Image (cartoon, rainbow, N blue to C red; front, side):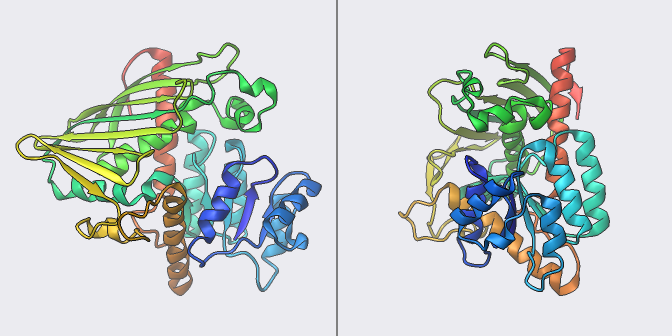
Length: 373
C-alpha cells in the first residue's frame, strides 16, 4: 500500500500503517508522507521503506507507482480533510483503489462529486470508521437485526473528548491546528471530526437511517472558528428518536464513545473505552453481560475476533478488521473487476451520509429549526 500523510508529528497515519499490517496481508511500501520531500524521506526512514519510494506529492507517487510492476495496490488517505477529494480523484484516475480516513471530504458537495467518481470507476473505496471494526459493535448490530430488542425506540450516543478544552492550537500543536482551521477541516469542527463517528455508529448498528435532525453547535474556546461542542436531536426512519452529544471541550474525558440503544423489550450498552464488554438489559428478565471472544457471540462478532476470551482486543485490532475486509475486497475486485465491498465495511455511501450529516447539522444550527435529512 501507499500512504498519503503520516509524516513527522502525525497521529492517524502511523495508526493506519500498524492496523493495515497487523494481519500480514498488507505492507506499506511507498508514500507521500509530507509536502516536503525531505520530511517525506524522514518518514520513509522511520517506516523502514525504500527512500526511492518516498515522494514529495501524491501526484508524483501515483505517476511513478502505476509504472512499476510492483506498484502500490491501493492508497491510504490520512491527510487533512480539504485534501481528501483531490487525492482520491487522482488515485482513482490512476486506477488505484482508495482507503480513506473519515470524513470522506471537506464538504457535502465534494462528497457527491466523489461518489460519482467512485461509482463510475468501479474501484474499491473504503472509509475507516474505526468503531465499526469492534467485535462487540458487530454483535450489537447483529442483535438489532435479529429483533431481540423489539422495535427500536430510542438511541443515545455520546462521543466526549477533553483534549481541546484549552486553545492548544495556539501553541503549535499540529493535530489541533488543522482541526480548528475551516480551510483545512471544512466547515465542521467537532461535528466533523468526531460527530461523524457517532452518526455512523447510530446508522451502522441499528440498521436505520436518520431522516431529520435539530442541532446546536458551539465554539466554546474563545477565538475558535469552528464548533468544539455539539448536540443533535434526530429522528429515525422507524419513528424512533435519539440524541448525539459530541464534544472536544469535555474536560477530563479521553475518548468517551458510549452507545445505548433502547427497544421495546431490551436495550444494549457499549463503551469504546471498555470495548470488550456489551451489556443487554431486559425489561422482563435478567441483565446479560457479553464478553469479547466468547463462543456464544454472533457469527458476525466471532468472524472478527482474533483472540480467545479474556485476552483484550482494542482500537488497533478494530482498525485492522477494516483493513482485512478491504484486502478481501481488493482480491475479489482483481478476480472479476467488480467492486465488492462487504456491507460491514463503510464505503462511499457512508462517506456521503456522513458529510450530509455535517451539512444538515450546520444548517439546523443556523436556523434553530429541525431540518430534513
